Image (cartoon, rainbow, N blue to C red; front, side, top):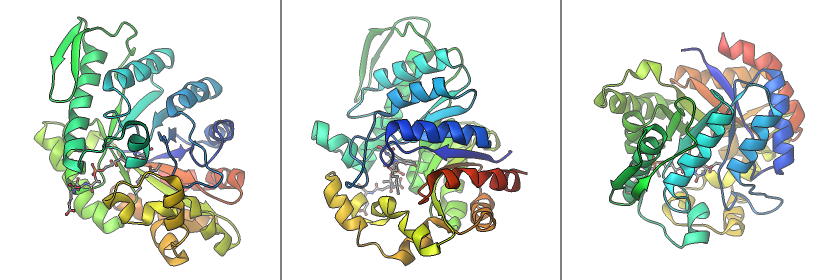
Amino acid sequence: MKTKIGYFASVEQYKPMDALKQSVRAENVGFDSIWVDDHFHPWYHTGAETAHAWTWMASTLQATKKVFISTCITCPIIRYNPAIVAQAFATMRQMYPGRVGVAVGAGEAMNEVPVTGVWPSVPERQEMTVEAIEVMRKLWESKEPVSFKGKYYKLDKAFMYTKPTDEVPLYFSGMGPKGARLAGKYGDHLMTVAADPKTLKNVTVPNFVAGAKEAGKDPSKMERAMLLWYSVDPDYEKAIEGLRFWAGCLVPSMFKYPVYDSKEVELHANLVGHDMIKNNYVVATDAEELIKQINKFKDAGITHFCLGNSSPNVDAGIDIFKEVIPAVTE
Ligand SMILES: C[C@H](OP(=O)(O)OC[C@@H](O)[C@@H](O)[C@@H](O)CN1c2cc(O)ccc2Cc2c1[nH]c(=O)[nH]c2=O)C(=O)N[C@@H](CCC(=O)N[C@@H](CCC(=O)O)C(=O)O)C(=O)O
Ligand SMILES: CCCCCC(=O)CC
């Protein structure tokens, strides 16, 4: 499978119009895809945004020419009803055939708790995600009104009048082994987040492959996509500091406890040291280093990169890919 290089245009880190302009630039540079975070609260407080991902996607589809665009990722189980998620993505896929995807996952407290007060356990959220996908696919595919009585969601003669013209590719996020297995079984493709390449190769990918086989699918035809943040700058220390916005994602307690106040996340993020940032994200001073680091994840089995640009000079962080893309995709 040919490696694809995608651009993760964050609407929690950047103003929505800036993220749109970055996406236009990324398409011109040769990125294969554009990905957008779907958040209510952001991973940092100071200077942060959280534009609505689907609204932003619709504008960005119109502003770009042919690039594929997907969320990375949408949690379709608590603040959103899965039928409405299905409707939004069906509308976009009909208007922009072949260009729209959706990635789903079991969610984060910061996006669900502030507006619902609801936060089930991980196993329950994973079960809800699987049922939400069933609801979405039924509405996309059925030629008749659908009635469905699941454990979490119900449909009563629901009919989706505006259908996607073709199948909406569904990326399923799995960060843990069980999540990766569910991704293989129920998703069209895997979505995950950068981890130690050994863990990706020996745990995440094998679980994804096993899940796909369990469902009778051919895993070699399924993408393994991964969100990976990077920062590039001639000044190495400045490049590391560019990734501060995402340092909260490196704090384990953010996942163990339902933390949903972005000011609290920022307090933790500011305590993360430079070593931890450079060991978990891609920090580079030039294209050669970016190529080397991306190749490490390619060797671990990743086939589609969603690259989050946290470079001090954002445009330079896009343009350098004129050199990187040919080197990592051939
Ligand atoms: C927590 C792990 O669950 P998993 O299902 O594998 O992954 C969850 C993620 O997919 C979601 O949180 C996802 O919504 C995060 N996310 C995101 C993910 C991604 O791959 C790319 C981009 C994004 C961006 C994004 C996200 N979410 C949004 O809402 N919006 C976004 O833009 C996990 O570790 N699972 C383990 C099982 C863990 C478990 O069950 N633990 C037990 C306790 C165990 C113990 O304490 O000993 C429990 O909690 O009950 C697994 O194996 O699956
Ligand atoms: C370990 C990081 C999980 C994904 C965080 C996220 O929401 C990024 C937009």
